[in-house]
Length: 100
Length: 100
Length: 100
Length: 100
Image (cartoon, rainbow over the protein chains, first blue to last red):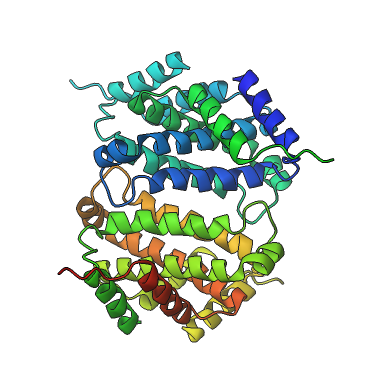
């Protein structure tokens, strides 16, 4: 994952991008890409969307991930570590219900 | 990453969740979490947001990632692979400009 | 405003649209259009965005409004009335601070 | 509608808000409120959402509209006029198909 982040940073550096890539602008871009992903499912079911547009869905999903990696890099926080910590909080917030 | 997906799936199974987790509903949730992330930056600069709410930002970033992993799992597509393939397309779409 | 809603409904009927326009699908479209609006401001300041893309901004703003009117129609709720009621709640939630 | 905009502006002035309400920040807030609206429909059908949360749906719809009115005011553009102009463009983009 660190390797992928380096590739993304190199990609941006090669194009003179990245100066405006602060956390706020990255959060905006994550919302924009998330909605381009959602647009693949507009007016139709999951099944129909995947049947017609699977590659577009994968590409938009990738775009969300690419911006998410950049944000994690700006924050100096590993995504997998952040996810594990968040799941610990979720486990407390939503305890397993034992049926008796 | 595969291990983390298994943990997420187990988390959902333990709570009887996941039946509604089709690709369309996951795409909706990715947009929702992306906007909870963006909300951390509402009305204030990146610097102020990070100074005040860094842990909340990391937690919301993690939530986007957790849903993104579930979507990648539903689609049977590895996120890192998808990102590398998308970057190849981006490299063609946005060629490096050589100044002469 | 009621007249405008009738025009939108006629527009949809003329094209055989509208069968899928339930409240959930309209809410998805409102988020999508809101993000197309936001995209006009990606990577640049409000001033630069307006200088370059004012008509696009107005068009995307209009798209959000058109879907919002359809949702209000589906819910049988007047938008202006809903806004006034919401502002009463906001006034209680955020009381005016009197400095002494 | 102009009267409602005046009420919103007065509401903001009374609270010392509004200095940061440029078009970009308003567009961010429109996306945020659109997603709070969409959240009412997360994991459930339109019917179930309306049955359980109709007032919340109306309130979030109102919040989108309140920010949309502020943006239209900042841009000096009437929402109804913008919607009518946009529908003319849509009518050209999506002509009525005559079946023969």
